[in-house]
Length: 326
Image (cartoon, rainbow, N blue to C red; front, side):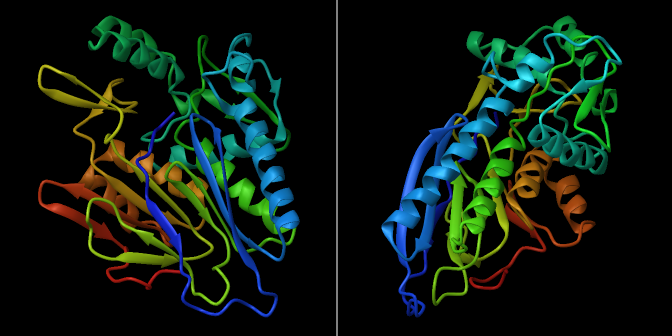
């Protein structure tokens, strides 16, 4: 799974609370290889606690479906048995995620690809040995990768794999998807002012009472903060997880084109209508690189990005001053 570096978050507190005198509550639990943090505003501790518990239960269920680190997960069992072309029923949650994933794969021309599982497993093997995989291994794994060889049925919850040995890795989308699902679940329980931070993949609901948004401090001393509500934010970078071989730094984020970790990966921050899309975009821009990634963002309405480089940070559609993006 893609490990994002943390973004510092804090709800604005200077304004007046609403007439209901909503209180701030915070909860956290480990899921999906990171810590999920929920901050919400509710009228009483019971409502807050029940809402958070339900959200964490939902996140735990999604983890049991999506994690390729778990041998008993749906994605692991799914790719352990299929014959090429066989129609396989799947859960509605996985079906919904894969439909979104395939749409982004087409838009990014494969920079984002959830069928990267064979390469992910090979790269993890290499990282444990602190050495690059040989070309033959990479070529063999790449032969089993390609979003074009995953058919997601548009009408029923089912998929087909068109090549043998395919495997899914949902690390570039699952945390954002889970954060969105948790915020939606909280809203269904009457808790609309909520933030779910999945280790840097963040879903924001309505603003805290009396405020215009949640304050987000940008990474690595980038000037200013953003005030956001009802959007998704995601970050990507190799700050905490990388491998160096012969003086070259390789990210844990794999480029489907080369089969290796991205070399000298930039820091990426993305904003989109939801955390699922922001999560995907952060992974995709890491693979694309600074110039191609920012050009890609320029062509998509309603999204924004900040990407690091040798000359500092460069942005596209990104708010330049605090308080300007909702």
